[in-house]
Image 1 (cartoon, helix red, strand yellow):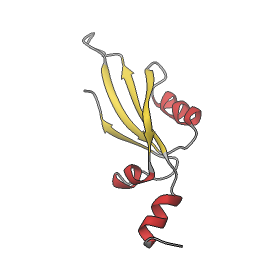
Image 2 (tube, helix red, strand yellow):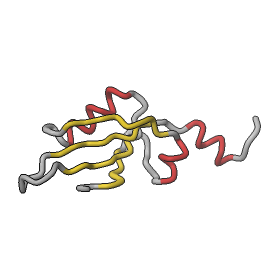
Image 3 (cartoon, one colour):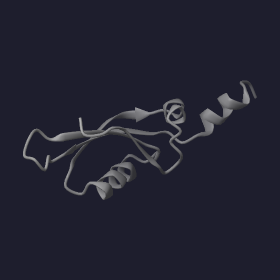
Length: 87
């Protein structure tokens, strides 16, 4: 097997999704956006995990997140990491 131990570990990690959540603004101003990394490989399960946090939000999957990106932010399998909140 080629590659360093870290490279092999990254390849074996779960991939996930970059998801944008649009939340109603309580003040009535423009909606708030939350950008998250979700370390759940199944797209439907990832959306359900976000929906459980924000049941009234609009959710859009931006793109797939590879293992390297998830590792950069230390997002563990099955977890959600909020990159930007309330922008």
